[in-house]
Image 1 (tube, rainbow, N blue to C red):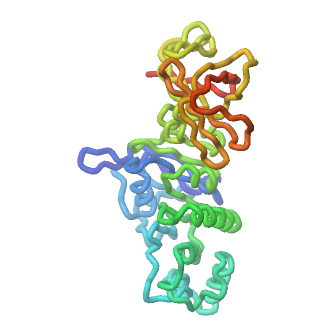
Image 2: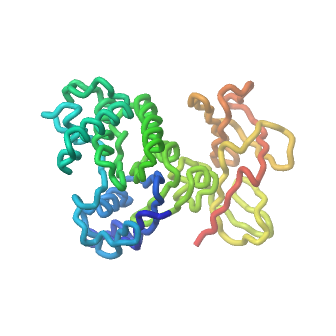
Length: 344
C-alpha cells in the first residue's frame, strides 16, 4: 500500500526549473532510491518532502492527506545527511537519544530503545564513547541509529556513504540494507551512485534535469533502460546513431537485425556483456583490438570497426582473451545484446 505520494511537484529558482512535474509513490516498508547526476533535482525534492522547502506547485501526501500545512518537525520524517551532523559535545548514547528526549520519552523507554539500536548497528559497548574518537564508519552507524530512534514514518538518506572509501562504503552498504529490511523502514535514499542504488533499493527513480527519466526495479532498469540518457548514466558506452529500415539497422560500421515495424532514425545500444569470442553463429562483428583494461572480475576489450570504437566485456578468468593488435570475431544474440531508442 502506498504511504507517501509525490504529486506533480514543481520548483523553480529564478528562471531555472529544478523540479518539473515530479510524481511517484512510495509503499510501506519500501526502499526507493532517487538516482541521478549532480544538479538533477534530487536534494531539492528531498527538502520539499521533508518540509524544509515549499513547492511552487503540487503537493506531498501521507496516506492520502496533504502535508502542505505540516511543518518539518511535525512530519515525523527522519533525515540523515552525508556529513552525519552529530553533536560533538554529546557521547554516542546522548546522540542516539536526542530525538527521543525531544519527544519527551520516558527515561526507561529511551534506555531500552538506545540499547536496541546500539545492538542493531553493531555499536554495543560504545554508549559512552566520545564522537571524536570514532571512525567514519562508526560515526555513520551512530547517525543512522539516531535517525531510526524516534521510529520515523519515513527515513530520508542524502548521500550517506559519499564521504567513505570504497571498501568501507561496500561494507556499510550491506549493513544498511540489512538494517532497513529488518526494521521494514520506509526509506527514500538519495545518491548519484548507481551501484549503491541498485544494491539497496526495491525501486529506483532516475532523474534528469528536474524530471523523472525512468522508474523501476533495479534489474529491470539495467536490462531495459528507457532512453539514451539512462543508458549512458548507467555506464553503457556503445551508443550509436543509426537508421532502421525493413528489419535492418544501418550504421557506419555494419548492419544489425531490428524489429520490422521500426523505421527511421534510431539510437542503437550494444550491450558490452552480450558478446562471445567465436567464429560461429549467424550474427558476428569483426574488428581489431585497440585497447584492453583489467577491472578485477571483468576485462574491458576495446574493438575498432571501420574507425568506430566498441567496448566488449568478458570475465577476467576467461582463457585466451585477445591482446591489443589482434583481429577477432565476436558473435552475439540480438535479443540479448541490442536495444533501440526511437529518435524524436
